[in-house]
Image (cartoon, rainbow, N blue to C red; front, side, top):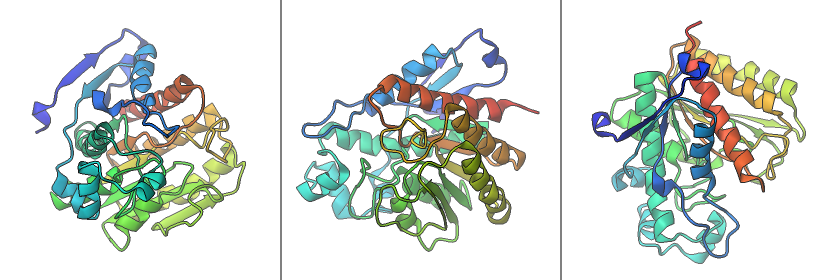
Length: 321
């Protein structure tokens, strides 16, 4: 199937091209107009691709197919999947999601898990790949929540293991919000480890139980964050020994994020991502990233944070030192 994927190379003469090639999964339908009655906007998924081009980063675009419905129903309640597919999601569920589920939202909700699955398959070939969407870690069995419709991380992990592409998967969630939906959907599985490092007092109010949760106090900055990350991540990698890392690389721990409560600087996000990829590379573990959260009025600034995350992960993956 990978050989049938449409690819669009974007190359540069910059020095960055000597070190890396970013494989990024993107579909035009990732971008959808804001739905009536909601402040959530999908434009950042297109702006990220603009930011990658402006950064002169060499990248290849891989276009995903929608995740087959059977794999979504293997994780989510089939009645809820039907509601999304037919745009009959009850108003109380749409309020929990944060926007109405229109035909375009339903389509991108099917594409996003397909994109995360595809990024994982590409990562197993190249060492690293990014889904320029995804990270929908709040979606629960019978409902979406927190701007998430279907949980692409849980869906992709389940399919990869069921089809024999991996035996053990670590879902490393460094979004500022706890990955509660992922924890619920994968709870009790010995082949999926969920590690969530998040702001303890942020959404969701009621936390689920990940395999390992690290709740950080408000205002945690670069040094304390890195101390917490490096205290737990290497032992998890060495003890659990995953075949693949699905990295929820939310940029909302940034100090200027509208919905974050942590205080990472640009340099702190850079250190975080490079530490994650270096730890994976040293152990020979492929890594696929999803975008996760990032919120603010300056949409291009958010897009650049996401694009920079992908670029540095690709740099570290391609650096043979």
